[in-house]
Amino acid sequence: MSEEQFIFHPDSEPIKDGKVTWRSPSNIALVKYWGKKANQIPANPSLSFTLNACATTTSLSYTQREHYADDFSFDLYFEGSQKEDFKPKINTFFKRIAPYVPFIKDVHLTIETSNSFPHSSGIASSASGMSALALCLMDIERQMDTTMTLDFFHRKASFLARLGSGSACRSIEGDLVHWGSHEDTVGSSDLYGIKYPYTVHEVFKNYHDTILLVDKGQKQVSSTVGHDLMHAHPFAQNRFDQAHENLTKLKTILVEGNLPEFVKIVESEALTLHAMMMTSLPYFILMKPNTLAIINKIWAFRESSNTNVCFTLDAGANVHVLYPQNEHKVVYQFIKDELVVYCENGQYLCDRIGFGAKKINS
Ligand code: DP6
Image 1 (tube, helix red, strand yellow):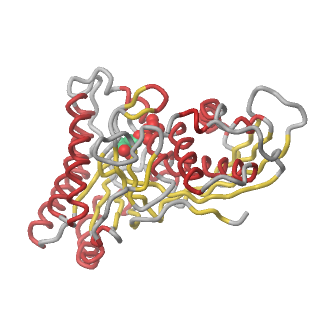
Image 2: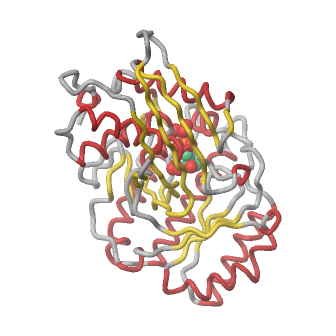
Image 3: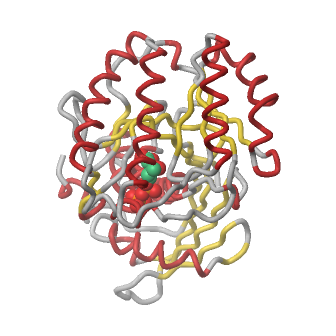
């Protein structure tokens, strides 16, 4: 499918005033997206678990504008208060998506958004936030085009979300989502995320992700800057090739439920992401001493308990602790006894694999 297929058809119902609300989850990458080309095209394919508890709920109210103007008219409320500083990011998003949803220039939009997780938790809200907004816009489009299939609805929502934030295109559906062209993944595309198209073993069905908030501060490196560092990076091509290889290996691992091999790939992906940042110019160390302490504790516990607990990281110091449902009791006890001391103010979030975004009655 090419970009042209997502251009809006003008032969549809005229837009009416209304309001739509969507709740969209965050996601955690197993194979990381790090590096991109123009127009939010990823430098390598990625795969993620959709989360459940960490989510953004966004309501979008729309009313016809009195006079047509070639710009965007919108107000933005975050957790009840008007947020001027979020507006430039949304304006850039609207500019990018306007060719595909031109009706956004015909209406005044009121965006009301809130997160299920604390604002200053260091948890990126761009994936859940941009996907929730993309879904609201698609809901409006669907009201004007009643022939739209559910497949197209999901695909275009993912396509639009990608133009807001790359990882957001993996937050529309669940429970595993693949984004980016990959020769061993049928139907994969750089333009949108797809539900993972292969069989996945039962053991991955109820996977847990306990997010340890090691550093709740502002991100040290924005993802825009981070992705950019891959352009002149001496190891970039090897890294992109490695992501392709890891996805191919995961195909068998996911069917077989081979947890020891799963752990190796997931942890290696997290460490490679950080290694890329440590070896770029300028260079960054995004782990904190407590991140390392947690990783060492997880390794020691995995060895002694014979479990398959593992970690992954985003572009920051927080640690995502991943483990299957049948190990929940023992691993959760270990987290409480030995890992929570490393969290800022003892804070952590309990999440698990989820099934994608949901429409909420407005
Ligand atoms: C480390 O999706 O935040 O979380 O496209 O610039 O918005 P933009 O980047 P973003 O990058 C996420 C990077 C990552 C890995 C991942 O989620 O795959």
